[in-house]
Amino acid sequence: MPGAGDVSLPPGGVQKLLNNNVVVSIDADGRERVLMGRGIGFQLKHDGRIDPGKVEKTFILDQASDTAHARKLLTDAPYTLVQAVLRAVDEAERELGRDLGRRFPLAVIDHVHYVVERLDQGIRIPGTSMPELRILHPDESRVAEHMAASIAASLERELPPEEGVFLTMHLLNATRDEPNGTAALLFRRVQHVVRTVETGLGTALDTGSADYARFVLHVRFLLQRLVERTMLASGDSSFFEFAKHRYPRAFGIAESVKAYVLAATGSALTDEEVLYLIVHVERLATSMGRGADAGDPGAPVL
Image 1: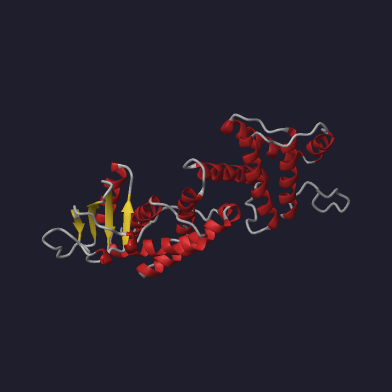
Image 2: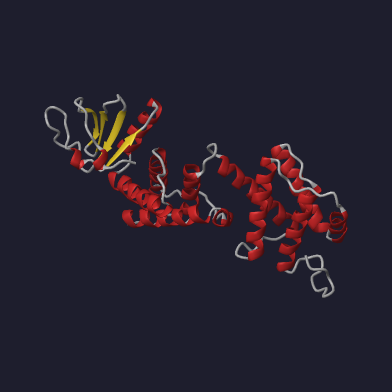
């Protein structure tokens, strides 16, 4: 996301004035540049030129539809909000040690503008804490929380606590080297498996426990193995048969997870994968005093 030092205005000067803080110029390659800076469009010289030193940020987008969207967004959003987001994005890039791309700041501006407008109307967008995110993506979650706090401080107003979740999803889309939406799809599937286990056990899981963290990570890697076709497999079914009969409730929950995975992906889990699901589910149940052997000192340790 280039700043003032990257700006070199071509002979064509300013093509369009969007407002006092946003103008559009054509660069030497014929691409539209959306230039931002406080008062950058105020009292332009008669030839339509501006001082590059006043340019704070530059957006260069490849597609005409993207540029049209950026124009409207940066025209409609209050400049104080745009500045707050851009400052938070700069901080996030420093924390993560990488460029978050051209579209990321615009996506966050769009999101935060929408949230603030709804809040001003007394409407709060529903959200959840999604504790799985902090386990699966700790770096992005931490940076997103910092971004939310930075934006709130700059705007001098409170933002809903779930904004950290929404910003984490935006960060994942920007930082994952995979098709857009893949991270979100994987996360939704992990969530569905967690909810399946909670339904089977009849209780909410302790999201702060080590067993929960291990389980969520296991499910994530299980789903990745499924996509990569590297599922665990073994010629010895004796332990699977033992666990199946010894822990019928955990086995039933694991079978429900297997059914969901088959419906969602078209691939069936191997007995070995189901076995490890049984082990993790029983550990979760035992940690909450709901295991098949709760209170039985002679029970085998999984």
